Image (cartoon, rainbow, N blue to C red):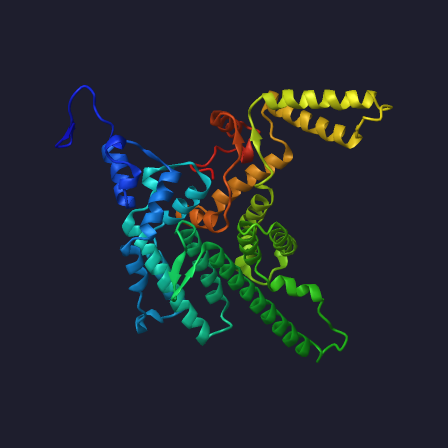
Length: 410
């Protein structure tokens, strides 16, 4: 039995026998049960999601949305207004990323009920204010950029609401909010392109006074476009399962990155290392894996043996031998065998690891890094086998960037 916080008797009842998930309605209660009653440091992601759905249906969250009111003080300079976003808990982004990419969350990484309500309130308020700013300055690029970020953040929350978020009198599921974010970044790109054309026209009219044969190359307009917008759009399209569109925007980002040394915006130019790292991660994240289980080499050996038997039976009508298949299997076998014996990553794996280290070096603030990783939907490393093997690989002199792994490798 349980009395005054002390357990008595030989056959002690377990906390989850007394309090089941169906009886927990808030994140606060979930944290309290896990920490105080069960003494656990981690919580299953599906348990958090189940409670989160209840939270979004609670009167507290609905009240937070309905209580948003705008005042004259809300319409300050946009740079001052973005300070409102500091009211949103930093751990929100790591929390949302972990729910999607992890089976287990640290209890300390779970946001409280108050932090959830606070995030919903300020994101919705910022959304309404930005929409008023757009009406006043419809060609303001930073407004559309911030609005795109707000829609991405709201989409991450709406994913765990039963029907979506009630915004401006309508219910928006997370897919609709992702599409709105894409639209905002697309408009920002169009405004940048228009600005670039206007600036080019101004240069042409000025320089014609000196040289009638002067002309700008049409490709110069690419230098006015911000590659970050293409990366965000590509990531959002991938979440909507539009792989073709995501790849097209990613390749457009590559074209701009190729000419980044001559980009007119010094701020974008200075971000070249992190831009290159993010591009490489988004491009290869789904394909790069680290397999530390040795049975994969054995499987490849059997496949190669089978293919060579088909080669010897080449005159048989049932033979389906292909030299391309044999070459591909041999290449995989050599790479896997080298990885098995020497723990040496292949060039693609090494480039991927270097990109992750570059991201962590360039974005040193954990809060800003968590936000970037969440908004770009960067997936975690795909590791098969014991995690200790990955740590040994990263700590070797020939490991990524000759450095120890960061504290949090997403």
